[in-house]
Structure formats: C-alpha cells, structure tokens
Length: 305
Image (tube, rainbow, N blue to C red; front, side):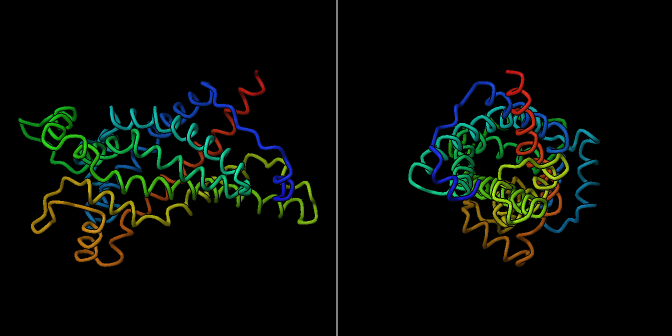
C-alpha cells in the first residue's frame, strides 16, 4: 500500500485480543530461553568489563557457572520480563499507531512512533527492575559460603534504596527500548519494501501488498535486528549504571551523564561500543522471533479462526 493509498483508506483501531497478548509473551519466553539469554549475558559482561574481548567474556562466563552461567538472570528476572514486555509492547504500540494515524501521519511514520512509544512503556512498567536485576546477576561476585540468592539481593536493594534503587538505570533502559523498537519495526518494513520493489519492480503499483517468501521475511527481520544496534552506546551506559562492579574512583551516583563521562575517561570513544557483536546476534534473534515469528504465529491462528 502506497502512502496515498494509506491516506485514503479508513483508519481503524487494531483489536487487542488475549490471543495476541499471549503470543507476544510466549514468543518472548522462547526468545529468552534459547539464544537470547546467552547473548544477553555475554553482551552485559563485555559492557561492564570493557577490557575483555568476546572470547574472554565467554571463558569467564563459563568459569562462573558452566553452561548455566550463560543463563544467569534468566529465572526469574528474564522470565518475568519476557512474560510481560511483549504484551505491553503490542498493547501500547497498537493504541499509539491508531492515534498517530488519526493525526494524519503516514503508516510508516505511525509504525516507527508506535514502536518507540511501546518500547518506552515496556521500560517503565516491567523492564526497568528486571533488566537491573539481570545485570546485577551477571556483574556481582559469585562463590563463597555466604553467597546470597538473587531474591535476597533484590530484597536488600529494595530495603536500602526503595523503588528508585530497584529501577536504577530505568531512564537509559527507556531510551534504549524507544530506539530499539522504533528501529526494528522501521528497518524491517523498509527492508521488506525494498525487497518487494526489487522482486516486482517499481512500476508495479500493487507491490506493497504482495507477499514475501519465508527467506525474504527472515532476512528482512535479521537485517533490521543488526541495524538496530546503532544505539549500542546507550546500552553500554545502561550497563554501567546498573553494574555491581566496584572500581576505585567510580561515581557513586551514576546518572546517564556521569556514566558517559566515566566510560569515556576510562575507555575512550570505542568503550561505548563494547559488546556490540553479541548484541547484533541478540538483535537479529529477537527481531526474527518477535517480528517474523509474530507474523507467522498470528497468521496461523487467524487462519484457524
């Protein structure tokens, strides 16, 4: 559908069904429990320990807990996050897309803005404290007879610092999610459109509504997932704000500005891109699962209805 076609078409609100919310939660749980969490752990380790290469990060993670070391923070924090953030994203993005279209924005612009708004909603509802606790699990010391459980650590942080403590770094999480999903949805749709133009020709006025094959759809999602990692500096700042690593001279009150200054002082400009390689892997896997996988699963249940 072209921009003029979209403008002429009646604007309707997409229905929010329990089925779609459940699909979002299920896909996120699958993504996290397979390749998602290992990529997350390696990326977080490299963002917090910016002198370590990816190979060193993998070795140290394995030394911390064997294969299970790559799933630190999965239970319960990543599962809580996964079971809720997909539903929040779908609900918030659908509502925002409807009102953006009412205000006369194109379907592409409405999709990008609704993805950004959905990402922000994720951060301030459940992702803030879940992301913080996942980072705590990867960066806190392990071993020893008095090793505390993850729930004990969470309770102590809450008792000591309250809601603000358990949501440390949430503003950076919101900025990351805003740019993440705006980029992922936007780059996916742009790539799909370019593929349709290459396949059917620019002169084909109906090319926007023609289907793409499975390989093309997966490729579009993978490309979008990789391109969405342009915001890696935001992710490194987020990790530094939530890290439990104690370093002499490190600011106690870690705001976005303080974290940025600390990273640049110790690691220079390239410090902001530590962990980008595993994050590209994570971005590809997440986008394939949530964008391509979401289209496939929702399409399957729509045909069964």
